[in-house]
Length: 128
Image (cartoon, rainbow, N blue to C red):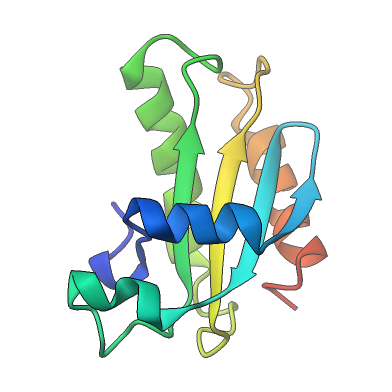
């Protein structure tokens, strides 16, 4: 199941803001970029009522896998974990999260991927 629309990041200005104003947390398989939300950027998308909520984007490069099917499968795994554990996340915190997967052979090892995702969520203090 996909992330709800009110939790998605979109627009090039949003990603430029995250790249410039974020704290970066590195892991072996992925990096997190966490930035405070900036609702003025999302005004052009007419998302005023939920613009200060927690929002997420998951980016998977073609370097991870050339096949879109495999990249989408990895994205769905991370989104599923996020949706099942969303109650633990302080949803009132106005943070934007960008997840970038690094090159690595973890396509067959779902547990390593989820373990590192959870560790980086704790490290970035998005989950207590």
